[in-house]
Image (cartoon, rainbow over all chains, first blue to last red; front, side):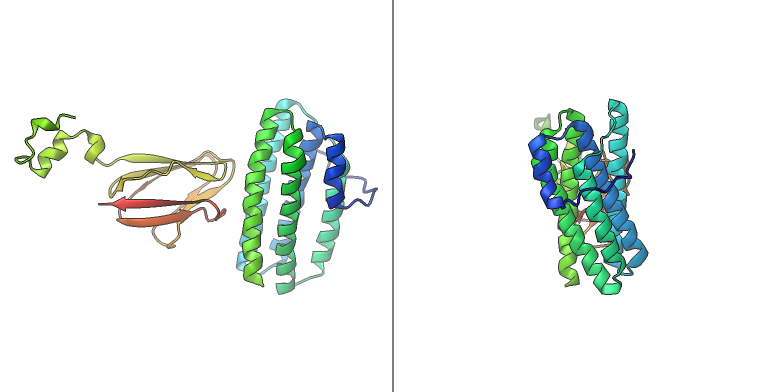
Length: 172
Length: 110
């Protein structure tokens, strides 16, 4: 899957979901968005594992890397089986652009400041992705297996969001 | 059940145990399936000596970890099937250590 995108339009993540909803994303686009969202959180988790010394934060980051890798492996196997080629789209591009900025911002922080910023972003990011899954991606998915995988993803990412919220409280 | 063959006033506990079908007395095995981030079908009426077979049908790694931090902690990679014999009486809330929103309780009687 080609995950190198031309970062053209400076779209914010918040603006993107409605834009896609209006057009109705196709299954190849939905697969691309879901996969991209996973790749982004894996990268954020790896950054946290490289920077954080906090046991709870590291445990959470490992959970993110492990779970999102598992879901993405499943997604790759599914698109291969369905002979679908995931299609790049403005939502994926905006997600990547936002993620790149967030990685750069977090890279400058260290210690407790990094931990708090990472976990706060995980809360916000999972909220955004869960909102997009529930309001746009799942309702527009046509293939039953893709829809089912997205639903599992939503259950999982809600759990991640709750876990991140709990850790954010502990760090305050 | 043919319990009426054993006049209750005469039957020893042993005779009752022998007369009852295995379901009533012999150690049982119960499957608890993990799927879509849930512990499915956690059994009630557990007894010491019974076994739990944890079956992870999810695509994610999970665990079955007692919240008292010492009674049990079973690592469950995707596809894992692991047996655990109940050796203690009591109430044991448990979670998945990776997804603490996944919860259940085992209540074990003698």
